[in-house]
Image 1: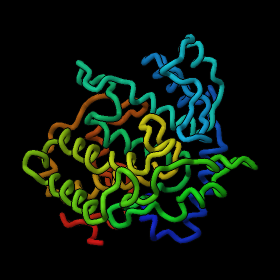
Image 2: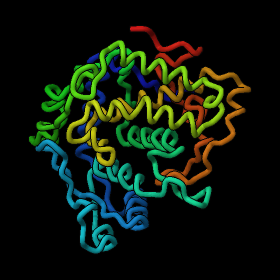
Image 3: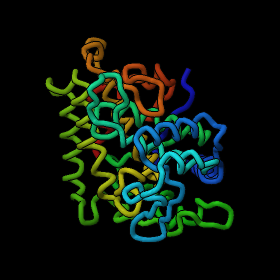
Image 4: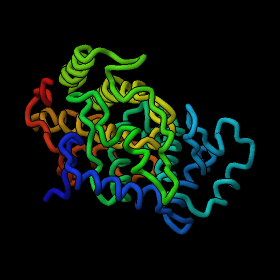
Length: 320
């Protein structure tokens, strides 16, 4: 039985949007976890393992996000700083596990050791688990921004709208959220709509090439490099252009939900023989998460989650 369906943001009615923003305010922005919570205990242990200070404050009032402390310039005792943290907002916890997850080796000599969550073959499974972690706190699905069909950020997620919706009491947390562009066909790094669609289609077709289709590392690199990175770079701004702290921008979750859907779409279109031929799922430990990549490869079976518009064949979602 399916637990819930992640839906295209363009199809959400006001009730679904209100559910998301209400839960985001109450369960992500306002809610906190303390040092009795196993999640914060694990964050401290992993941060100490990679000798990075946990970030406790995020200022997004300027052109670029300012974090305190900045791990690049931190000169104090890392473990003392980390171990002294008694609580933090859920959003800060999520941002920190994303950032700390980037600090592990890309190719550890031990094939089961912890591996970083970007530019590695745990990118897709790690971020699938990360979305599930977000939804566990949120209490509702993280729907998706289908930037293949519509290159503009969903209207409800544009800065002019979220600055008055996402807040903690009287403090408008996202009043000054900065983005370079809210339309992927506009701005310094943009492409025309036809060029954008052509690039997506080419990357999608490449997933079925003989050198990629049964090679999970190649599948992950294709989706991360060709279908994930561009959105961060074009939207840009104080959060999205910074891969370490990008979960601060709420569009991050809708973007990554669509990236996860691309993986789910691809997997769902494979024959049984093709699925069985993928034999190189990484066996590395994923920082913060207990599952291995091969255990979460089928989102409908392994997590009982589905997507609105989950593909049943190898055609693209649509041709805008």
